[in-house]
Image (cartoon, rainbow over all chains, first blue to last red; front, side, top):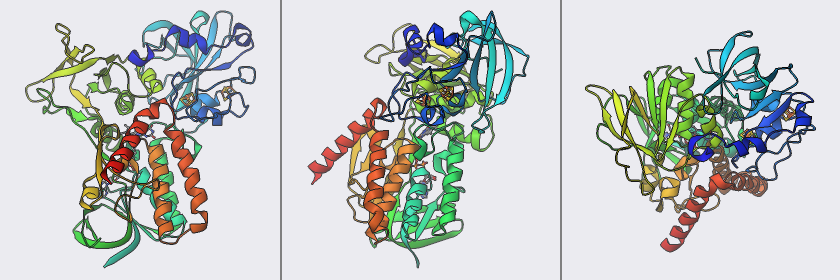
Length: 161
Length: 364
Ligand SMILES: Cc1cc2nc3c(=O)[nH]c(=O)nc-3n(C[C@H](O)[C@H](O)[C@H](O)COP(=O)(O)OP(=O)(O)OC[C@H]3O[C@@H](n4cnc5c(N)ncnc54)[C@H](O)[C@@H]3O)c2cc1C
Ligand code: SF4
Ligand code: SF4
C-alpha cells in the first residue's frame, strides 16, 4: 500500500491510466499523484490547458487526455517526479516511456538498462532512446525509454548505477 | 548605538520574505543571520519545491534562496549582516549581536524572529557512535560541503526530510539500505516516497532501530518490527550493515530568544514544541515582536515565506509604512496560507494552531 511502502496499488495505477483509444493516438501524460498535497506546478506547466485548474491547491491533479499532446512539460515541472509520458504507438512491440532523471550518471542514448518497476524490481531490459535536457532548465534530464509494450505501465525507472 | 526600524533575526525563507515585504513597503530593515550566507535551510535543498507559483514551486530550494537574496539586495533598504548571531534580547528592548570579533547592542523598533528550528535526536543503545548523524547534518555535509558521509546508510524517519535526504544520498552515490519508520504510515509526501521506492530503497513502516553496533564507529544496526502498541515484536530483530545512520525524527522550533523576550509561549507537540502565542499578523504577546517560519511552528518553506511576508507587512504598517496597501496584501497572504495549510497534509498544523489558540485564551 502506498502509505505503508511507497508503492501505489494496482487500482490506483489503473485509475490514472488513459483508455485504449487515447493510448492508440500517441504520447500522453500519466500522472501518478495519489495524495492531496499543497502543490500545483503540473497545472501551471501545461500550456494546452489539459490539466484542469485547481480550485484548491490541495486538489489532486485532473487531466483531460483529449487535450494532452504528450509534450512532457509537466514531467519537467512536477516536483514529485510523479508524471510520465507514455507512447504506445512507438512500435509494434515497444512503447516509449519518458521519465524524469536527476542523477549525475546519465545513460547514453542507445544504451540498454534494466527497467525497474515501482518497487525497484527489475522487470525488463529497456533501451534508452533519448537523453533530453529538461525543458525546466534546472539541471535535470528526461529519459526516453523503449520498453516492452505490455510493461508500459510497469517500468518507471532504471537503476542509479 | 546601532539603530534600525525593523530587525529580522534569521535569514531563511521566513526572514528573507519578512525583510523583503517590510522593505518594499518602505521600512528600513536589518537582517541578521549567524550563517555566512543567507537562505537558511534552502541553501542545502537541491530538490524541487512544492507549493504554487507565488512560493516558487518547481524551483530547487537553492534557487529560491538565490532569488530571495537578489530581491532583498535590489530593495536597497535592507542591511544584511551575515556571520552575525543574535545572542540576547534585553529588558530595555535592545538586542545584542556577535559578529566575528565584534559584540554590539542594537536598538530596533520592531523585531521579527525567524530563527527556524533544530533537529531532534533519538536515544538508543549505541546512539553516540561516530557515523550517526541528524539527517539535516548529512544534507549539509553532502550538498553544502561536498562530503560523502559514508557508503551505506540507513535512514530513521519517513517524514519529508527522511525521504528527501534519502533521495539526495542516492544522488550523491551513496547506497540507502532502508528507511525505517516507527509509525504505521509514511509521514512524508507519497510522491517523494515513491521516487526512492522505485529505485529499490525499502521503506519499513512499523519498524524501529533498537541498537547500534561498532568498535570505534558505526558498523551495523539492529532493527525490529513494532506492533500496534509500538512494542517490539519478539523475534523480529535483524541486523543491517551500515556505516551511517541518519536520524530524521522531527524538528523543534528555536525559541530561546522568544522566551527571553518574555513572549508568552505554549507547548504544542503538533507544531514541534514551544511556540509563541500570536495574532493573525504574527505579532506575539509582546508588542512589536513578531515571529515567522519554523520558529512559529514546524512547517514548510512555502508557508514560512508567506508568514514572513505577513509579519514584515504588519511590522512595517505599525511603523506607518504602506498603510494603504497593507490590508489588501495581508488578506491575500492570509488566503495563501490558509490554502497551503488547507488539505489533509495540513491537518497536523491546523490542529496545532487550534490548540495554541485555546492555550492562549486560557492563559488570558
Ligand atoms: C530536507 C528538508 C527538505 C525540505 N523540503 C521542503 C519542501 O520541499 N518544500 C517546503 O516548502 N519546505 C521544505 N522543507 C522545510 C523548509 O526548509 C523549512 O520549513 C524552512 O526552511 C523554514 O524556514 P525558516 O526561515 O523558518 O527557517 P530556516 O530556513 O531554518 O532559517 C533560519 C535561519 O535563522 C538563523 N538563525 C537562527 N538563530 C539565529 C540567531 N540567534 N541569530 C542569527 N541567526 C539565527 C539560521 O542560521 C538560519 O539561517 C524542507 C526541510 C528540510 C530539512
Ligand atoms: S504532457 Fe504536455 S499537454 Fe500533456 S498534460 Fe503534460 S504539459 Fe499538458
Ligand atoms: S506537480 Fe506533481 S506532485 Fe504536484 S500536484 Fe502535480 S502531479 Fe502532484
